[in-house]
Length: 353
Ligand SMILES: Cc1cc2nc3c(=O)[nH]c(=O)nc-3n(C[C@H](O)[C@H](O)[C@H](O)COP(=O)(O)O)c2cc1C
Image: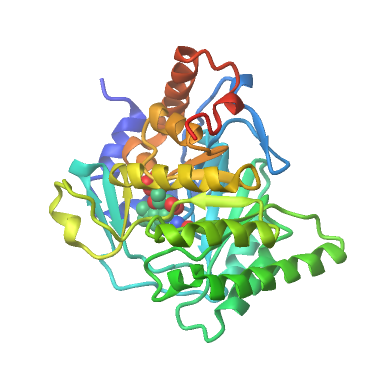
């Protein structure tokens, strides 16, 4: 017999991807979500950058761009939700269609382009949340902005008091030239401006929050060490590795593979995990890592953790797995730990590096 949750996931997949997404957000934001009851699992509990997490698996940025379904998403079992990317002004994003399923590849291509309702709505939603749970705010800049650094600073200032942590997104492939901000000359001024803005907030008594930088899997290898060095120099807590890729790995089966945009899901797993391992090794304990890219199973999450991730995030795996995603990944993760006689997940962090 097909369970109710599987049925909902299947029905959503009969709709075009963006309509399915909007229907899911609509339902979730009205509380039409199952509650996934997870047993308290001490072996998976951890504190990262001073924030306590019940387990490592969170929902990656881009699912709840406007922070309007956070409590329902937390009820699905995620240990944290990264809301956003939010830009200072509301923005429509790119023309539709702009999300494509690559079903045979367990992948998605999107070229949304930061469609979102803007900072004001985002912060209003965050401020009126009743529930507990870890919520990060992922900030970006408007496409038409003439001062991108100022956009990020405005985002930081607004979300800082409301979020458990903040992520700076300079790695989306769908805002023209955004990824150029990962280059040393641009990133240094961005991170210095953010550092300055944070210090002013702290001086005014706002509680310090962890700050993460989210990177692209397509950064050239020689650009990776400067990323780590700059993150350390400017007081960041860590890196989220990675965003979607503009590359198209060999062997993709779906006819949608030639669509422009960022590829996510299983075909991204290998490259993003290898990059994570390299960055983790080079950082040598100076940064915290969050692993994203193709986490579909507990084995995948375990591999990210062994490559250096303290936390992992999934998006595409959740789209295909539905409300059973979190319990399935956690069950698989615990099975990997039992097989390897790992008694607490923190022992596995970086074990392959
Ligand atoms: C439809 C879609 C929209 C996304 N939007 C954002 C976004 O707004 N900001 C961001 O930092 N990442 C965004 N991402 C990237 C994800 O957060 C994640 O880094 C990436 O998809 C890799 O994880 P996955 O393979 O589990 O999907 C988006 C991904 C998808 C599929």
